Image (cartoon, rainbow, N blue to C red; front, side, top):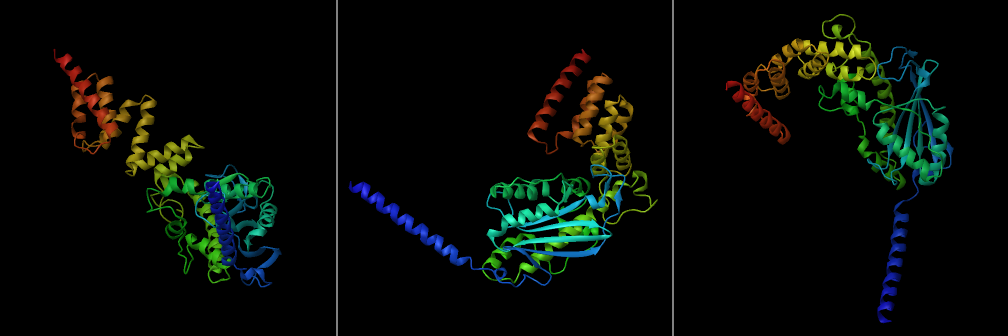
Length: 391
């Protein structure tokens, strides 16, 4: 009995500690400035208890219509696109991650409009999500930057936790085509780098997105000092999304043979990799994919040469493929090209000794375990074949 009494006493103590901890947390989250009738900043209006809304208008950023789409799913009127970006309480997923600011961009009647919804405190989340649903329209495609794997998933979770049916329209995530096109060219593909290297501007006094969660928690504690920076950061993100989509579509209209020779009007910013252009076209137009590979190889992009040679081999044009492999392996130290040449000389030319010669320079390369095993296996087989032929 004494043991049971001790256990019950410990449980009572734990319960009291839990209540005390809960009380301390409640005190820590003091009513934010938004609890009063004062808006977070000029231009905001109270939508309902717990939610503020503001609208920012600017001149049009998009053409009226995208008629020959490169990354869009098909020809689209610009007014049928929705751009969106969230500011959340965390930078990773999970049920505890809340979207406290939603930015929505649309273009109508020659004006590009950014509507922002601000959650001033937790109880307003249902109203925030309801208003978001009203603003995004009837299943219009949503343009984002990493929205497919992050923003849309946060929203889906919040809908479910609020016992609402998730409203997740088709996603057009610009991160993926941007990564294909410019990853080999730029130091990274963060939106800040994209703005600087492709869109031609650099934000001044910008509050980094990673600081947004702290700024909101400061707001809850009564300190509105940094929340304005979050609003501006979010609005700038939406504008950048629209400009980036236009830029990518402009590159899609660029002919490969005109991209480097000064013919026609070249889009602004760093030139994407030809292989990236080919990979993006591979989803829609194999002819354009091939043209970009050829243009890239002509300009010296080795990866374009490798892919082009593979296609030529599949088509049975071994002589053209061999020309590329030999060019790639001029130094005798290009593993993929040397292996392809060895295969050709072994199986097509029936010359294992010549195939062995191609592999000599590969021994000193820092190969992976799998490639080194493959090389050793091929070398031993060729040596046996060459010995048999000499006999």
